[in-house]
Structures are given as C-alpha cells and as structure tokens.
Amino acid sequence: MGTAVALLLARHGHDICGVASRTEVSARAAGARLHARVFDHSTELPDSDIVLIGTSDDAIEEVVEGVAERMRPGATICHFAGSLGIAPLRAALAAGAHACALHPVQALPDVDTALARLPGSAWGVTTSEGARGWAFSLVSDELEGIPVWVAEEHRPLWHAAAVTTSAGLRALMSSAVAMLESIGVEEGATVLAPLVSGTLANSLEGGGVALTGPFVRGEAETVARHLASFDAHAPELKGDYVRVAVLILEEVTRIRGVPEGAQSSIRALLDSA
Ligand SMILES: NC(=O)c1ccc[n+]([C@@H]2O[C@H](COP(=O)([O-])OP(=O)(O)OC[C@H]3O[C@@H](n4cnc5c(N)ncnc54)[C@H](OP(=O)(O)O)[C@@H]3O)[C@@H](O)[C@H]2O)c1
Image 1 (cartoon, rainbow, N blue to C red):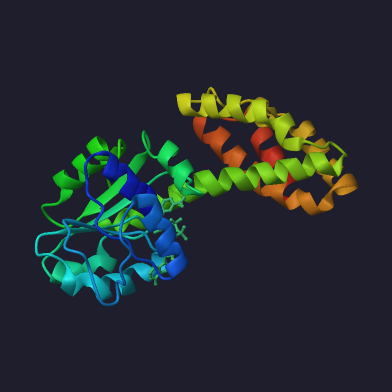
Image 2 (image 1 turned 45 degrees about the vertical axis):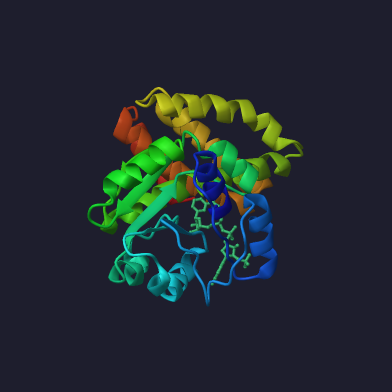
C-alpha cells in the first residue's frame, strides 16, 4: 500500500526521498521500486514534507512515536488504516505536524494491483484541524481518488462497511461454491460469475431492482425444499444458508415487503432449521 501510494505521488512530481521498513528485504524491494534510498527509521528520517506510514495497523502508533521528533515542523504524516483515525498519529501532532488518516475502499493484494485499482477509488479522509483541504486535494488530484470525509469516531464503522463488502462477498462466494461442489458441480466460480456480475450491477443501481428470488415472491415451500436438501446432502452448509437467508428476508421486508403470510412462514422455517 505504502509503495503504491508513493509511486502514484511520484507520478505527480513528488520526490520520494527515502524508504524504511521492519526488514531489510522489504525496505530494499520498496527502495528499488521507488528508486529511493533505504534508511533506518530508528535513527533517521529524511527531511520531507510528507511522511507515509504504510505499516500494518497495529504498528502505526509505535512507528510514529519513533519518527515524530525528527519530522520537519509543519510537515504532514499519513497512514492508510481504515478503522483508525488520527489518534495513532498523536506523537507527530504533538511535535507540530499535520495528521491525516487516508483509507482507500479497495482490496489491494500487491503494488501493481494497487496502481491499477486506486485511481477512481473512494478514500475515507480524517485529518487534524486545517489539513482537510490539503488531504482532499492530495486524494483527488494526485491519487486520482474520491475523498469522503469521515469523523474520527466513525472510522471503525467506515471500515466495517468496507470489510462487510469485500470479505463478505468473498465469504458468500466460497459458501455458494461449496454448495455446488457438494452436488458434484466443479468450476462453481465460473457457474456463478455471470450471476455475480448481474447482481452487482443491479445492486449498484439501488432500490429494489436487485432483489429477485423466492424471498421476494414469498415462496416458503421453496425455502423448505432448500433446507431439506441441505439436511440430505450438505448438512455442514445449512448454517451458512440460514444466516444469509435471515439477512435476505430482512432486506426484502425493508425494501419492498414479503407477500402477506409468507414472511412469518419463512421466518418460522429459518428459526427451526
Ligand atoms: N492491502 C489492502 O488491501 C489495503 C487496503 C486499504 C488500506 N490498507 C492499509 O494499508 C496499510 C498497509 O497495509 P498493506 O496491505 O500494504 O500491508 P503489508 O503489505 O503487510 O505491508 C506492511 C508493511 O509494513 C511493514 N511493517 C510492519 N510492521 C512494521 C514495523 N513495526 N516497523 C516498520 N515497518 C513495519 C512491513 O514490513 P516487513 O515486510 O519488513 O515486515 C510491510 O512492509 C494498513 O494500515 C492497511 O490497513 C490496506
């Protein structure tokens, strides 16, 4: 994440004056990618306008405490953790720096994927007083993203929404693929892919258009058939189905309503499953 952000900033004319990490291997890899010199952040911090902290979330505060005193007064320090605001940057704030928490709503497994996916992504922005405009410009003009202001106390919920989407979709897909495998259908992901694409497109349009299927039509008998089939062929997967079905039923009820009588029948089936 840190390397990708630095590369995007370099494309917009920033000079990357140094890179550090916990291990030498990582520091050298990032240094090679960024054409930047490797330094030891326990003893040194190059003179710079911006310090990017791309460590895992639980290391941010400790790393910031180590470098804060060496920051140039008026410089800005940024981290990328979703559930954290500027609190872990307090040592740098106390030393006269500006602080920014910048979280892209994206799944970024490696540097090249990050370079491809970050432009166009939304970023949750939380800053110290006076740094909001700077951070919004950085995100929109240089990281080519869409800045969204998030209050300090709302950062965990901001992040929960992103996790629910990305890891949640992945978990749903794994469960559905396992259901197909349980009846001997290989290549489950390929079977489901067009449905996933169509449903995502519908969901992004909003409203009730994305909702189809037995819950919308109030087909309690179909749900009963599903449950009986899990008992017969894949009892270990029934719990997944029931948990998701409860969510679906609540969503359908909220958005457009389940046909009269059917909601309580389906709910009773799920409760007794
Ligand atoms: N990846 C994503 O999809 C994504 C999306 C949004 C936000 N973020 C955020 O971006 C940040 C970085 O995530 P990432 O996925 O890029 O993690 P990552 O690939 O695991 O990289 C973390 C880097 O931090 C270094 N590090 C860890 N502890 C350190 C310490 N105590 N001192 C110095 N360096 C340390 C690691 O160094 P070594 O390799 O040397 O151990 C590693 O190079 C996190 O705050 C994360 O929440 C990530």
